[in-house]
Length: 254
Image (cartoon, rainbow, N blue to C red; front, side, top):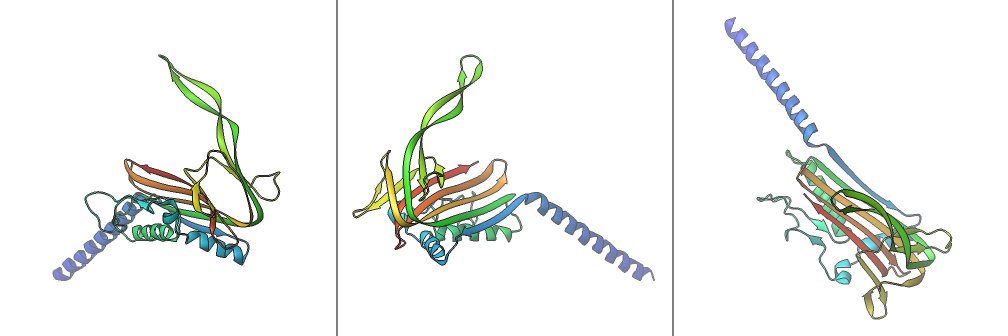
């Protein structure tokens, strides 16, 4: 009888320990993973627009821009082979390989016991066919706040002129979008691709307008995180060849 009591007590204690351990691990997981989100959206209205988007995602931008796809470790899978430091990787443009890389990295992080506190992966692409597309840049007034320190910090609102790139469809009363100049802007002619001058005015016929936005981030601690952001607009002709390209890259690390 005494032996049965000991066995029952042992089983009860083991059960209590197992339940407590599960609760602790669950609580730890909830606290560590504070923000996990993934969203991939591709918007198109026709089969031709879908083909254009697929073409835009498979363009060899590295050859056009003459720089590499990523900034970071030479080993693209360094985040799997953990070393003495975290492997942060930033994209220089958007293509299918970049999208696959961040999707695989996001999926990998979800399977790890010790995961980042936050992981986000967002990709949004919109494609529209236009019989006529007008792209130009113009100077427009902007308002902002500067800080002047002359013993006492003061705020002063000033107005300055900045370049803005305007995209118009056939109806030029309402712009498709207005953006600040991209870090990289190229146009294609018979000789190849060339960097656009500070002032330009271009019109394309029978083309596809593709706007792409990519964001990826991992947060490990308040001072251990990285963030990659790419805004990219591509114009393809009716043969699905890029004839205009604009890219802005955002990179951050803490």
